[in-house]
Length: 249
Image 1 (cartoon, rainbow, N blue to C red):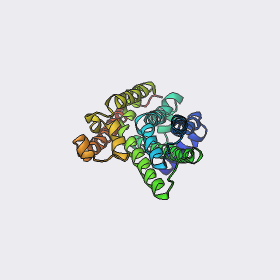
Image 2: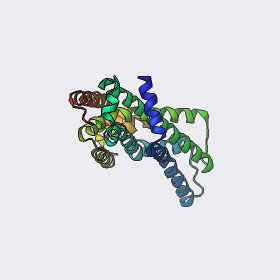
Image 3: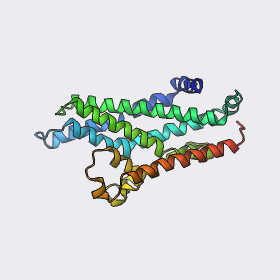
Image 4: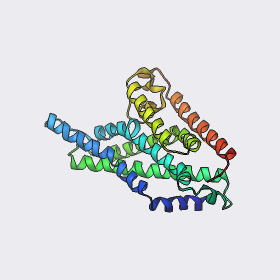
């Protein structure tokens, strides 16, 4: 298994999409930099704190660009052998289909985590150059934990993308799925139903929201269960389909 994961990263090092994804992880810091400049231009007296800056960045990470980037790299990983017509040669090396799927999934988790860390570091750097105030280690540690929780929940939430990609053998349906999720986020965010929609629930569960039960009349365990069930069902469906599918490429 370790050799499979190492092989995946060796192939990623030579791929363009890996470098593109690294640039993509800087979109959130760039947007926060623009937000800082806008705030200073609108009200030069107003001070933006590190806590506020990092909390606002969670909107882009969980609701907008971050989830699209995660879906793109997940679809790429599971579609690469179909695109390069190398699946048959890979599967002929005494590798079970289960090992193949699990190694891909672990590679995705590590890749997504790396991008999340880069994005977090970028936002912190923007805070320094943009003049954010009230810097403290506690604020940084708290926000880092929030970023990591958001990354984990996003990874679980988008697991059904694996099945979509394997079924269509193309990344376009996965991208459409991702755009649909983001549009749903924009439509439902701020509504009482936001706690039950996994896309927005990730933000509500990981950002510093006060009074989750009181505001949304929902126990936080409910959206967590929904997200975990989506991950389990998504992976089982992916595994069943891949086990039954003929390897023809």
